[in-house]
Amino acid sequence: MKSKVIVFVILNVLLLFIAAYGLWGAFWIWQPGADPPQWVPLFGAQSYLQSIKNRGYDAALVYGFLSYRVDIWDDGVQKVGATRFDWTQFSLILLAFFDGWTLIDFLRSRKAGKSLGVKS
Image (cartoon, rainbow, N blue to C red; front, side, top):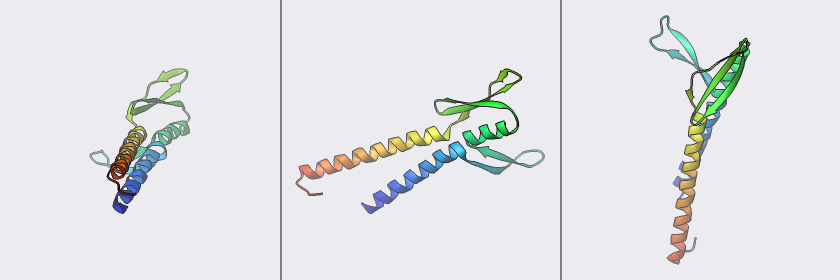
């Protein structure tokens, strides 16, 4: 039983970390194949929006199902951004599915134990 609790906690923390990174995270990686070789940022949604606003643009974050984009307004003209995969939504859906499955499994095993006369 302890190992199940440990796995449950580790997966929940991992999925919540991925969700938080998907919103606010940012780090730099080396871009293979670039000419000249360079470092490029990997941004979460809010970090990406903030980086565009820091350049002086008026920008807005637009969410879809498992996706987002940052639209920019330049001189009153809207420039639609590229759609990007949203890790936050994905990890929260996965978290809800995993936690729901774990809860149902726990309730079923508890009910099965009661029907057999086992005290829990």
